[in-house]
Image 1 (cartoon, rainbow, N blue to C red):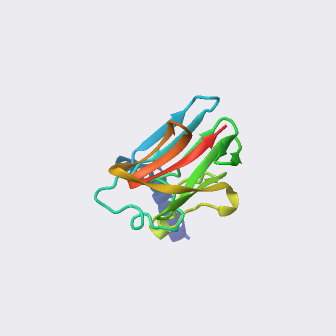
Image 2: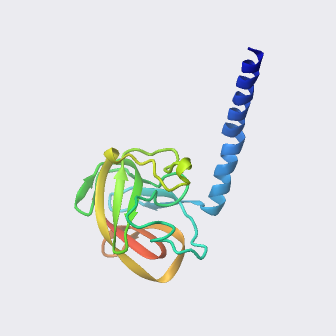
Image 3: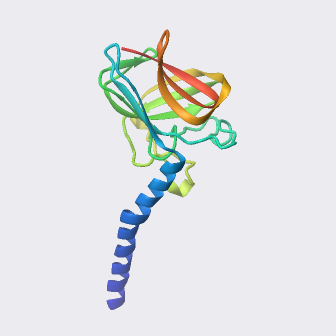
Length: 186
């Protein structure tokens, strides 16, 4: 009985140590390599923001290798990327209600599928898979669109999400030599 009591105390202390010391330390270390960024757009009756973590290329081949083709990607690093709109908008020709969504992508060589999901999980990938499997629940997808890939003439060293408003407002994702633009309308 005494052994069981001590075992429970040790397990409890280890759990608290992980929760309050090791976990926060690990998150801090990952954010040094993939800093948090925010992109915002507040014009034309729209109030949009994207929060994401921006990993670096570091000489690696990104799409097709580090980020495999035809597999859902958490779109960035660390916690899931979130897309927030204060009002209902259209993504290409599909309606997206106001709210905050996790943003997922399925990169391919010639096009990407962009996925808006109503759930925002804590981390976005399973630790047991070494980060290869996402925690996305497909039945919580609100909207999916497919957009073509553009090749960049200059390498984008760190993953970047931003809004471009030239002829058409677009959510733009770029990394390595790849860029995709997702048209947005109100």
